[in-house]
Length: 174
Ligand SMILES: Cc1cc2nc3c(=O)[nH]c(=O)nc-3n(C[C@H](O)[C@H](O)[C@H](O)COP(=O)(O)O)c2cc1C
Image 1 (tube, rainbow, N blue to C red):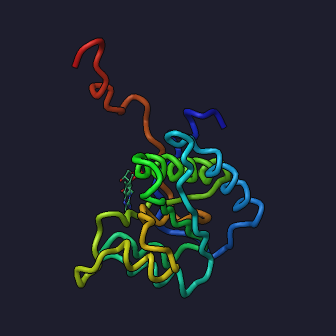
Image 2: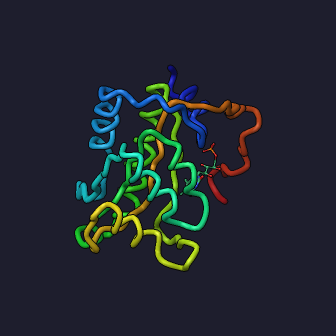
């Protein structure tokens, strides 16, 4: 698919079929993530691939709202980053995350970014702490998000070029 068309069709998908994601597709997503650009080539990200149902269920309650969809996904990739190496860990982890989502879209899969950094669960505990505990991630790693991935079980409309907010662009000066 043409790249602009891929971007137009990439939407957040929150309902997935039970069908597992094939190992070859997971491998392609890994390759894509590992080719992400990173400040000073720090590559301080770490990716935890989760397919275990009980773990996906636990992750889905790691914050008060907005993570429920993880329990219905056959696959999630948690994006973490070492905060002690570079000062661009949020940027680097974010870029890797969107690359994962775009590769997933190119493979015909749906995905949704579920934010962890800065979020809390219903008792006020940090979502990042919850995810670190569930997955055994050491303290020095920021947990940016959980990317839920799977075969789409909902229809989403693609973006329409003529409805984009072109006024966000400014010529020469703001
Ligand atoms: C930084 C960030 C955090 C997000 N957090 C969540 C989340 O916690 N739960 C969720 O369901 N969607 C989350 N999303 C998905 C957004 O709601 C979605 O991208 C936005 O509404 C635009 O819709 P689209 O992705 O279909 O274009 C997040 C997206 C980003 C980029």
